[in-house]
Amino acid sequence: MLAKTFGSAVFGVDATLITIEVTVAQGLGFYMVGLADSAVKESQQRVEASLKYSEYKMPRQKLVVNLAPADIRKEGSAYDLPIALCILHASEQLACERSLEDYIIMGELSLDGTLRPIKGVLPIAIEARKQGFKGFILPAENAHEAAIVNNIDVIPAETLNDAIAFIEGKKEIQPLLVDTRDLFFTSQNEYDADFEHVQGQENIKRALEITAAGGHNAIMIGPPGAGKTMLAKRIPSILPPLSLPEALETTKIHSVAGKLGKRATLVSRRPFRAPHHSISDAALVGGGSFPQPGEISLAHNGVLFLDELPEFKRTVLEVMRQPLEERKVGISRARMTVEFPANFMLIASMNPCPCGYYNHPEKECVCGPGVVQKYLNKISGPLLDRIDLHVEVTPVSFDQIASTRKSESSEHIRSRVIKARERQTERFKNKREIYSNAMMTPEMVKEVCIIGEAGKALLKKAMERLGLSARAYDRILKVSRTIADLADSDEIRVEHLAEAIQYRSLDRENWAG
Image 1 (spheres, rainbow, N blue to C red):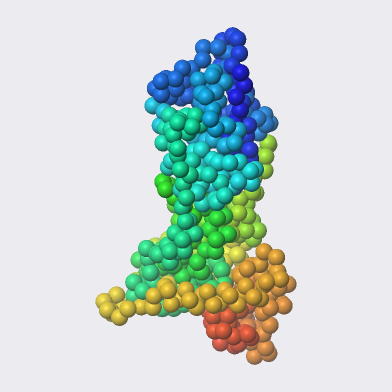
Image 2: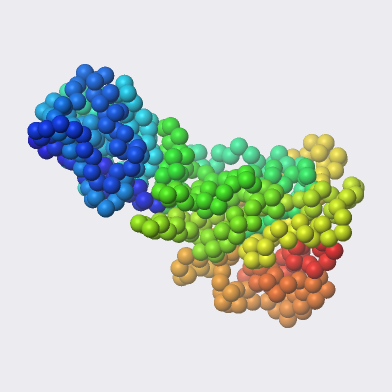
């Protein structure tokens, strides 16, 4: 007898329908065909043990399991449940009240028949709705994630026996309904860290406000203990809230990577990822024999924070150059090419020199001649070219630390950032895939960032006196456009340019001299 149901395989952030067929015939042996990896082939042992524990029998005949289409590689343990149900149906141990073909079924079986959670549930649920399936039977721990998708019955099963009883009509499992949008909007503005807890550093807060308002990349340079990491962790709290499409896209990436956890729903806050400097190229941009999203994709629609930037391997930093420009990363393998979105804000921090005290107001730098420049040269020019703001962080004085005066809250800063972003949305409404000032092309900079004669004179003088490089020109104009947006100004005034010029520290020829 032949039994058939459906599962899914995830490639990139999208799911592909997989047909699972099982036939029981005369003879002996268990055969799995359809380009399955080792984890899928090992399902024989898990399925047999869980069937026995659930008081069913593994047929002692010739069993053929086919996973179609046969040219797509299947990996992981998520096919255990559909294979087990098809084996029971094909061996006439399962009397189907509900058709197996009406459902997408996924889940990993433990040896006692308990269902374990799987990865990539959200894209699978989206594909199930798109293909017109009645429902999605899956482990209970993944049900909240799948319930994000409406117009499909999400059937949570704790064990193999639960799934069997549901298919046989002996047990009613109510489809899980979660008002994900209500949960999403209520938890949107809940943050663990707030700028109101930061004493002093007003000039750095201002720079980070500009960074958030224009979607710019920034680097903070300062001695150890000046507060660079603490300030960076608060940046998501001043970014505009995620829209529903952004939240869905972000949640899909985290679902594929298995980062959502139990009872997870839509990601409601912008991601903040801070990988260690020992990270590999593949872990940062994504990869592996079966491509998985890297840190830059997990930071999509949020912030990627690289602490102690010069300590990262040069090859790791160089592979970020293309994703920073294109806002996506493509990973090519012999059998497939997978694309992951990677629209993130890069925030980096670094000490000014190996000892950390170059340009410190009180402590003396002990680095030898040329050591500071050698340290800065660890960051390549092309990468530095993609960073709009260079922010010098100085230590906070005792009086500022001991002050009881409350600083401005993230909520107030965020309201100004949102207004500035609204101006940019209006400005770029006819431009495809351009949402913020940081994304402007050189042609658009000439069109949008128009400055008067006084502004041109100031910029020329700054480039000559400070020894600014040519690459700083476009960056200064982009940042000054954002400063003007924060000031609710249609034109870029001289004071906007002057403020933008001071955020190009590392472009000064004598900075490390």
